[in-house]
Image (spheres, rainbow, N blue to C red):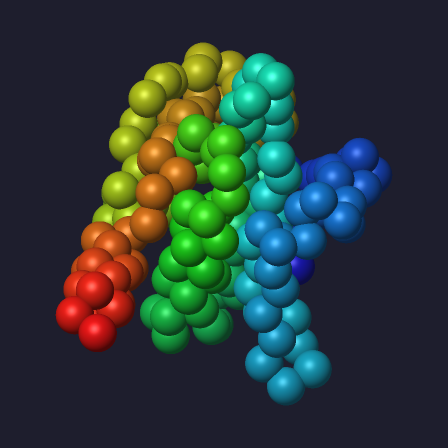
Length: 156
């Protein structure tokens, strides 16, 4: 999947991170029939003794399967899971500066550009990327559901 979607090649260390038990809930694969069509691969990264971040290492859907909600579903799932994990400050990723489609997609979910890194990539053009980040809080639609459930419980 990664070879078909991304302009970079990943080493063995990347795949070892993906399959670690601690990353199981924040790494998901999507199949249609028996074919892998999408994946979000993440890892926890320590900030200090009490805080950590979630790094989206790769996230993609095969071109023919885009615009069917697969990517949206995976990202909503990740945000929901991470928002319930104690001690996570944010979710972040790198996106090539000319990948306007991806940057716009992430912004719809509350990600902001927090930094530009010059010459981040070695073998692709342009080599620059943005770092995008969002707090590890639920999406507004989830907050609304949580508030509704809390209110109903209090009324009983």
